[in-house]
Length: 250
Image (cartoon, rainbow, N blue to C red; front, side, top):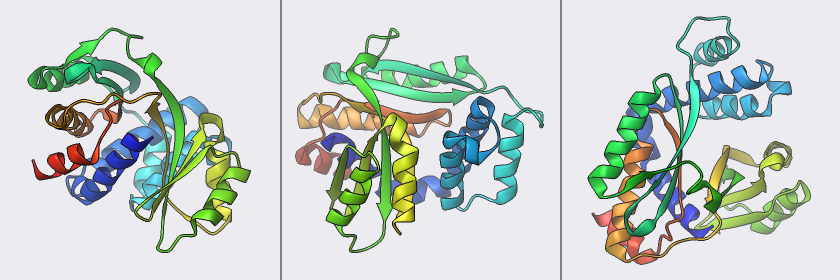
């Protein structure tokens, strides 16, 4: 899980800029709408909606925006029909990509993703050719200074977590898909502050390429994540310290 951990570090560094661009509220509202449509508008009965609303509150999204997204999701407000689609692709040197999207226009979304791949020398892949290389995990990121790793580990493990990683003081907890809600609740009750909790695709094995090729693939990841309709991007790229340094100075 080292590649995901390092990429999360990059994402934290650029998170403020993303919020300033105003895209974060749009994406969170779509998450809330989709979760409500799938599982109903009651947070206590819909774990996916509960997580989406938590993320909205952590991002200081206005209450009325949250309520409007829920109402739209359960069909009590008019709005464009949203659809979840996962696309698969290859970057340079055969690095695999899995892209989760939520869109009211699949043709537009597909064209934007294809443009990112084509510019970098990558390509879209047929359904199923990439997905088998990933598995979906729950990832909980904690915030706070001087967190006791052993204490976090015990609390998370007892609730069903699989792994806990400490990246320079930033602690991430990995869970099976079905245990995300229970582990997040246990950590919150244990007095920890959850900065983010969501389901993400994690590569079963990572692919190592040269530093310059890694930078190209990291740029693909970055450009895909900046698309409005993209909800998340996973890759099996092994992000080495050399590649990370090259990317940050590019």
